[in-house]
Length: 247
Image 1 (tube, rainbow, N blue to C red):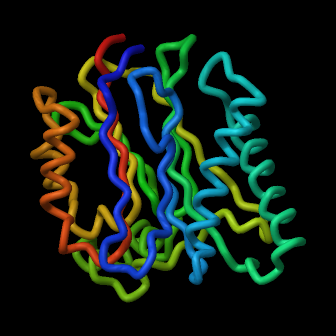
Image 2 (image 1 turned 45 degrees about the vertical axis):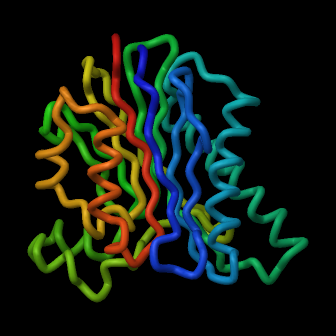
Image 3 (image 1 turned 60 degrees about the horizontal axis):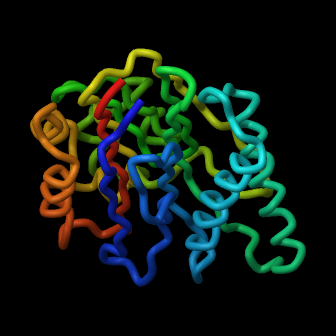
């Protein structure tokens, strides 16, 4: 499976510090692992948490190489590895307790015609084919739960006072659960978008369906999204855009 050169951003928005982390910092057409993490904790601890998640999972993959995309047991083991790193950090820096991070992850198999999506929290992954959303992750959040119970409408969710409260995160103190989705049907010109919730403050599904057509390049998409969010987004905003070139 070949990809075009991915596009990304990792911006501070209107916050005092940037608690988002992306991986890799610089991608190539050979990159196979992508992550966008959104940290919480304040006083630079959110930045540390998101960075530790990205670097920890990348390190786990380096030391436990995959033949395919992996399964739930493999990715759960990578999460336990990261959580143990958090616990070791807390022993030396107990003031860091309370820091946490979301995770959105995309992994391409070198041996199979499949990709894997994994996530914790409200950083999302979209699979888009010529303007149609084939799949999107479900946020681990209070608002997503209210939507599923039909307690609120999608319009009400946009400005809900609890829209930033997540129900699952990586914090090292309470073991978390990673959700995974394996996509076996991947086609040429398919897009995968990983993004923190800061991107979603101004990028809705109507824009995604209009912009993510098979003819558009990842750089043109990046420019559209950056124009949409720059100066309008209060939160940090980060993303990766991956487009499939050849199967």
